[in-house]
Image (cartoon, rainbow, N blue to C red; front, side, top):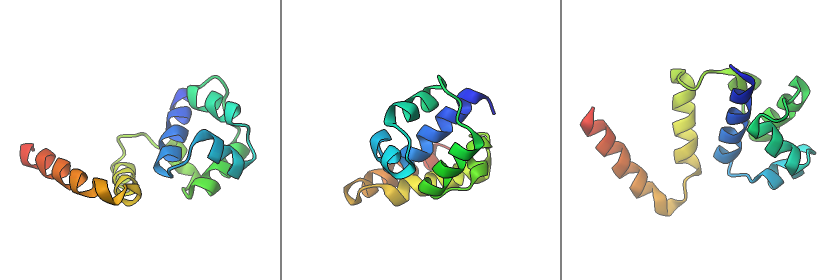
Length: 104
């Protein structure tokens, strides 16, 4: 996992949790600008920072270091998307999944 991959993972899990950078900042004690810099790869978060983010986001620390093509992580990501989807979007998600699987 590259350092820029850490930022992408942080952004992905923050969005899955339905949090803005400001909300993650409030819950983690980090300035939203610092979170932005972590996500863009300008700054590299320490292991301590990642542990705080993992706790706030409800994920395991190792999630930040897993490759996005890891099957277990893909399933977790999809579950998170469905779990956090607004009720009005569930029908759209079901349709999209059915269409994607019909093409496979």
